Length: 211
Image (cartoon, rainbow, N blue to C red; front, top):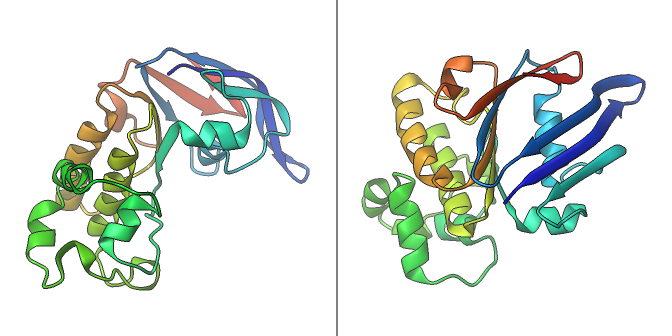
């Protein structure tokens, strides 16, 4: 699904972080966005995903313009996984009715199955408050399984491996490869080497995107 952004600007109070951004992404294209920490990369993704309301300009995912309609077409994996105080299963399905084969496939693709099989309660294991009873890598892979199970046409990645050690990061990147196959992808990072296989890499600097 294609993404169209026109004249997008956003400010926190008097501090402008995005300044008249225009961006067109074709369906199935993978685009990386690099820039310094605090430079507006995460803000851009939160606007696209509908977590923030657009102040100036417009964002369209296919024909969807409103925040609620865009959210239906987007799966997002952030730097720190957001988990509910519930089971692994509940964190994957997020209240939706979902066949076991879809859940199991998502766990397999997210590199979770072996760990889940080792747990006494399996996929019904409680993850704790804010995922406090699982490791950062496990939490991130649960978030990726959630995104795989949703099967949205657009995937947004916000530095999904930056808080992980190298070995865990490799496993998560393998899971992300499965998640992004055939999808339209925007991946923001301060590490350009994470994005070398993407179709385009853009730099966010001074609130503007530079090719």
